[in-house]
Length: 190
Image (tube, rainbow, N blue to C red):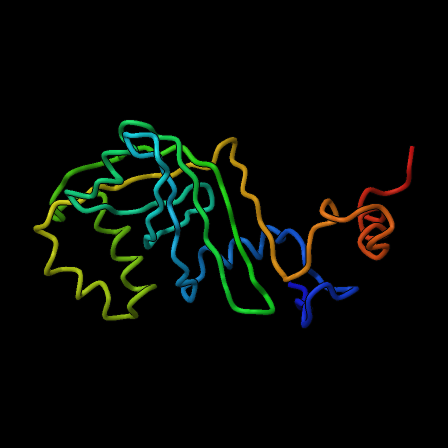
């Protein structure tokens, strides 16, 4: 894994840009990834809404657990199109992952014993609360929940790290360092 360098805004030679796949895996799935997933969906009246949630990432989809009366679950049943944002706000890294997703309710409302949502909720409880998290969750197993899968559209994630801007936001000649980097990544002209 390369060392990330981005100590100031708009620094030449920074590593700001899309995240390599191994960085995405670490950012989304490592045990110390306690970022919240912000789920954006459309209410029945057509207005957008956002709710922050704990999540699990399996390398292909996000999984979230909703309570029996979570209105966002009902909204996703009606219209499964949604979007997610997972972001790190701390400078200098400022990593983020965005995706348009399709929601699928895999289970629910269901009580915990023998349900699909328990292993997902236990993994999240350990990650967000520590080793005692799953034990704390047990007292609520009798409360009905939903397991919802959020699959990125066409498998696509949009990623970014760093405080610098992407080349597309600059006029030609404004950031020759980024232009040279882009040219190098494209390779020789045919």
